[in-house]
Image (cartoon, rainbow, N blue to C red):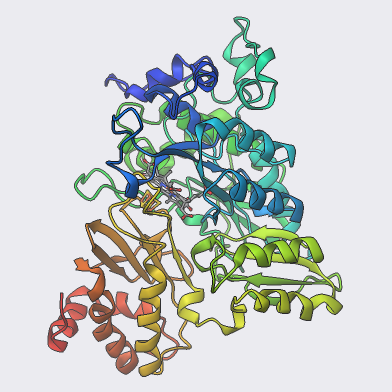
Length: 577
Ligand code: SRM
Ligand code: SF4
């Protein structure tokens, strides 16, 4: 099979040229790191992503001026870790807290893909930051960039025959699909004074056996779920594995392909898409089939237009049969058809649960994943206390929250008191609507944000809580997911309620997805001012209360009613917006 075969005559996107010329992700990053400047040039910015870091600037500080009188952006770096299945140690979390306090913006973000992000790292501290993360035996390599990203799996620490198998697969996939280039080691881990390239004219097979020198056309995302628990939102990934379980053992996986949520509303050629079921693989086949899928996307994925370069568009255009045929060709044999097994539940793993080995874990809800200390709430201080005094294993969830694992019965009360002491609510004290809400980073660091998200959602949830209590709906379980632009980083497009920043202060309100993540939501109202979101939704809550079927969820109700009816209720209520 020829490497990086391109099926299109179209002109390649400029990023393709940068990757090809980069000498396996080196570019001029080393030379730029040695310079006393605040930021990198545009080619290195693209390559830095593969190393796990994004150049950003504080958008609220734009327009400021430097000592030289020339106005310059307040540049800094976001650094994202690769943490397969979100599994890490207390020491690793403590090291992240130290880094964010010493050289970051003193906050840490638990992401929607079970990872951690540092913000506000200055260029002069970037090498130190990445080196310190690696010193704790974590890596940032391939946390971003056109490669396989952090692999998600249900993080629950049950001592059964299922979760550990899935978590191991996440680790194996992450390692197998990680880039092989030595550039990461040379740039960040080696003594800069002894820096030299380890390239001596070898081939792709030597330096990047899976990716070749152009890597993938675009980011690639993988997740693993089990029928009882789709906490990783498997259908929103490029590649998903749904465990097939017989007699309490994992015998293999139904493979789903071509999920992805990013969309540019003005470009009809872009759309959110849930993955399509493709084939059944045994546990032994899983990693090799994943490699074949990655290689098909490498060789046939679109490299001209980055807006259409995700795997979902290739599968949409070519069809699942064509794609499966190619995967079988690359894998070297036919694959079996999917079994009937599919996801049917979603557990967020919050609160106390027994692990099955006599010990406990506690799911701690972190509002929108942001860890900070202020006069009212001290998330970081609580984590420091817990990690130093109880030393639990840490697991991050795809809902931006944390599991404290391996807690002895005798330490349960202590864990709760360490949380309460810092002004933080126990999961049990949080309303359902807050617990099931998440928001992306957005302003001030995200260069693509159009509106607020993480900083705005808590206030909106305060308002929504009141309305739900008024109507006796506070026990309902439904997801509310907010993003500051249509890229969909908090997965709003398959939520019961998705709030997507569209224009300054205005959001598109989606409804009709599911907590299970298996159905796309539809637009209920567009360009709703932030202040009117709850009042715009209220007539739908009223109708839901009055007309729902027994046990019908909010998303199911909205889908059954259809948007024409929802808008009718809205207009009859005379709501604003
Ligand atoms: Fe994302 C870009 C943050 C999960 C779809 N995402 C970005 C960037 C890097 C902005 C940029 O390109 O300059 C954001 C950094 C903001 C900042 O200041 O930190 C960003 N994405 C995030 C995180 C941190 C959101 C969060 O608050 O948790 C999540 C990090 C996950 C991780 O640990 O790896 C994050 N992003 C997602 C998800 C959800 C998921 O993967 O489960 C999606 C939707 C699924 C998908 O990929 O389709 C997502 N992010 C995007 C897109 C749209 C991609 C597309 O196909 O169109 C972009 C923009 C892009 O790639 O051009 C983007
Ligand atoms: Fe930034 Fe948009 Fe992603 Fe939010 S959804 S983090 S605003 S790219």
